[in-house]
Image (cartoon, rainbow, N blue to C red; front, side):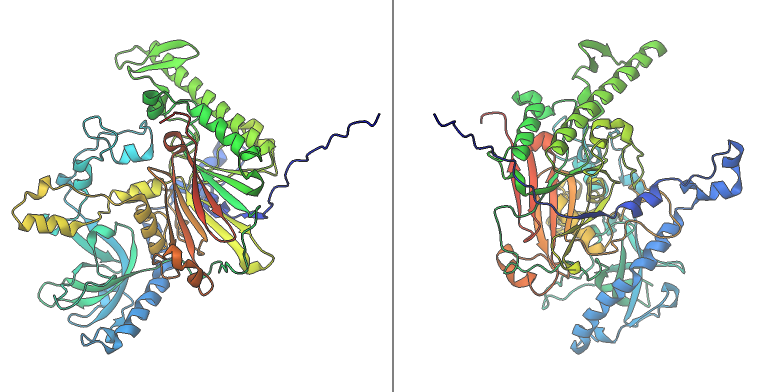
Length: 577
């Protein structure tokens, strides 16, 4: 009798893409340099204090930012001058002025400087929020009357630029500043894309403006504004040569895992965040469920642990191993210590859940990069340092697969044999985008029109910009965090600005967004129609912009195919509709 032969099925071979981390440049600005190991007196010496990050002045970072982006702004402005050389307005005769103090009145000029928005602080009400909020969006956009869906109109309106209420826009450099205002455009001419809109910029943005300084008022009326944008080097994709295969290398980006507690939507719907994470794990590791062999890397963009508010119950109690500790403001010192101990215990439990989830993904052969976020145990100021290895011991045992990166994140994926076929990936946990959204508005013109019709301007709803539009604006700025250090907490720097885009990324993402959005942009930062992307990719570099939703609330992850930059979202739902 012939023995029955059993066919052993080997696990699928995963798509391997060489990866080179380049986020170390952010870590240089975040980590204080060790001065000495000899004792306490050595740390107080003048030489040691010079290496400490807070020994620097914040003012130097604006000068370093302007020096890094000036040439790019001038180059983009000169391209507009070449096009406008035949214009009847004589804009093409504008000359670049080295310093603002040297500008002449009544002459077309090109000025480069840092935009400063001076707004009346009396119109800015106190924002009732704290670092214990469940996410970055709710901290920057607190809810109205307990609603989690509508942003706070009062908060948005307080940051809306309105020149009729005394708000002033300046352009400044080391020599001085000049007030700038949009130039009125006649009815016989359509408004161009480079027109100055005060509600599309924020304090800290470097720009080149073309205009004339008024002799009467000393105000520079801006004809066009030009941002730096990233350098002109990126991967040029050709769909003809990069054909899709069954195991096309795919980058998976996720954010907001929220380990340690269910999200508010789960509490109301009866869902389970832990179950959705288990579904995601099976999708990554089981070839019958998903195309797991194509995943070459997984990037977790912040939000790995649940927020302090989510660890508390609705009546202000903290659950700790079946016991309940009440955290009232009138507790004595003993009870306060008990509350803090309970919170520390819940944070440790959240980190253990996150560590176990990562170790299971890593054991399947998928490399993981973890970007620290809003509630992670690391420094609050940007750039955020990598999370300590002792907090994720199981994951850190996979030395060759697990990467603890800074926030922001940057790395290079080799998608081809050619050195020019390197895919640079750049992104963050999304705090820089959420902070920028406070200062941007979608349509200030609609508000003005309603005011002219007799409508009360203070009661007019303000439409805040979306996360994708804010991400797109930072791409045009050529700077990841233009609101730092004015609004976004950052480390001071005197040598250079770490958030300046030194190279053009192929994939640029932001985590912890309210919904999934994606956009393809060309070399000029303009949106490219997905249907016509094939014609654009073979001629000039393109960049895929991605807003990654919070997994704890949406159950969604984002997949980006590296050969073609095609992007899709996969949703995991454990509640029947």
